[in-house]
Image 1 (cartoon, rainbow, N blue to C red):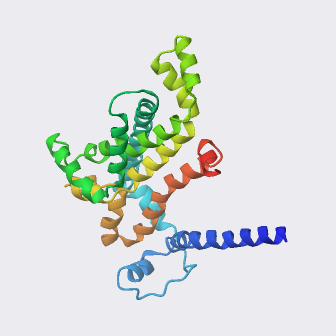
Image 2 (cartoon, rainbow, N blue to C red):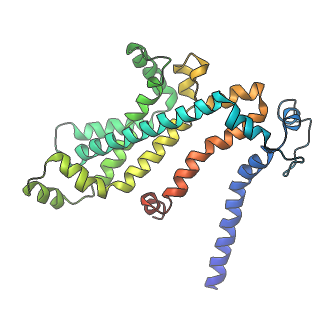
Image 3 (tube, one colour):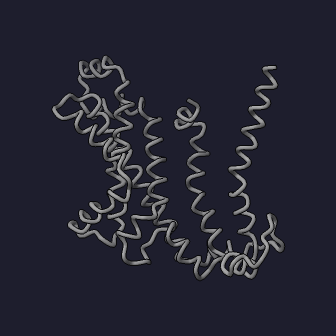
Length: 273
């Protein structure tokens, strides 16, 4: 009976995985349809009946989007660079802040943790107003700095690393101090290897937040040329609908790559918990 139970669970989760992947497969298959079919299908009110396997199949829109459309490629590489840099900086700042909040005793430490939790519970629509005011004071409106600096100093990573580093035995840190290790040595040679799975998690979450942002560019950017790829899809979809599905698949590629490559690494240890 036990093998039947395990088989039933595997079949159930197999159907669930197929149900989740079905829209992605459908999006990929429909990205292969030519523009003269896609335009009436997606723009003119579904006048064309969509098929799971479109006929005919063409790769011309991939060639145009990946090789000929410089705006799409520039937005992709700019967003990828800014997202990786902001996620890396957030992970490093979160490591340092988490160590201070977890292992350094000072007045107001619990208050800072409460404020971090309170900030994380607030919706983005509430936080975007002070972000706009601060960006205006620093004269960074209509620049990429106004988008990614709040992500770099977001409280989520610091709170997560604080909870993880707090489980590190105090004896290890005390022994390192007795051996003459400084704060930077303790942080990067003792704390960082222990907290590496949490750092990967902070990096991936921060990258996903920076990569998929929608509301912030609409408010903080005035020039549509600087819009990230998440908004450029909507703009180009109004004029070049054959690029929409291709750009959507391109947006999925970095996130899926991180998950696939980290599945058996440090992040995989957290996923398997």
